[in-house]
Length: 157
Image (cartoon, rainbow, N blue to C red):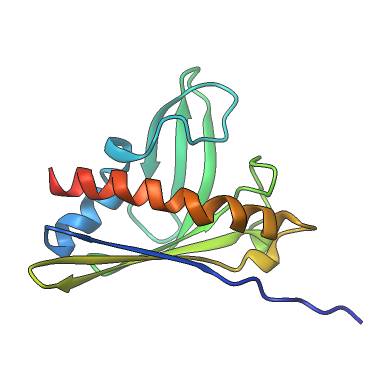
């Protein structure tokens, strides 16, 4: 008998001084403006970060040599309120082509006090093979804090 043990999701949030439509636009179409160029899984330096604006679209990076690395796929596209994408990166920070073992990231944009509450939930780590889920959760727990700060600065500029 096999037991799947749930791994707690990572939940982070930030309030940005802009409206939900602008925040959503900066997070998705503007990801290359704020995503750290050193946070990638390609073998060559990252040149561009791109999210294709539709369900089924890719979240990927273009590397300096012209190659492309898929980080995930858009699972839900609901501007300006919500985007969900798969995290197709394994516990060793390598591409994971099997979507059945990918974790998932949901980002919600809600008007709040003249700005936007941006809530990020990274979940379904238990899908990942071996200790990949626990390793990934541990890494992104702190990682999303810095990434959201960069996003907030871009959204407010």
